[in-house]
Amino acid sequence: MDIIDFAYLATSAIAAAAGLSCRNRGDENWWLVLGIGVLGLGLLRSAQAGLWLDQHLEREVHAMGWYAYRRPLQVTCIVAFALGLLIILAQLAKGRTRASVAFAICAFYALAVFAAIRLSSLHWTDALLSRQAGSVTLSHATQLVLLVTISAAALFYFFTRLSNSKRVMLRRTMMRR
Image 1 (cartoon, rainbow, N blue to C red):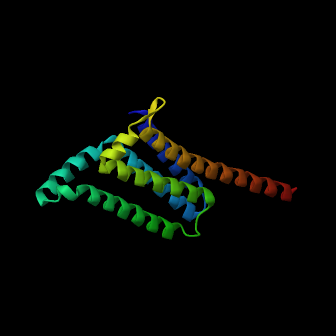
Image 2: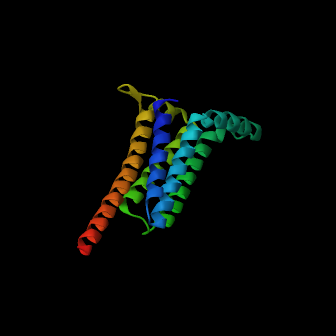
Image 3: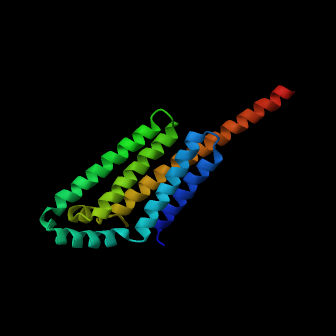
């Protein structure tokens, strides 16, 4: 397990904890969905599903005679996935979520699209994302930034809820006196 795998696992746990701590069913469901989604992306990454998928699809595209068209097909599939996921998330979250939840949904969307790009194994993106930015690759840095963003939004939500609960308890105590 490397640091990126740990970050996926930690982010998933933080998002799930935010979901389990809230009273608002809509927000609770979103945090749990985000936690499961991040865990799923992390498991795909850890299992190196991209390598298996790339090999399998390459064989299938060869067998179908479409190998020469594979790059435009990959880009089309990525764009279709990105647009489909955007439409689904936008419709589900429309006006029903708090800002921190919406922020986490946007970061998850970016992470899922990034995973789709990495899974497609486009040579130019592989070359770009494998470049070093200090001691870490651009791919790892991108994943870490998005995972930290989701975690920060979940922690902000969690501590805001905790702070609000304490204020309510303090008001109730003051009213009784």
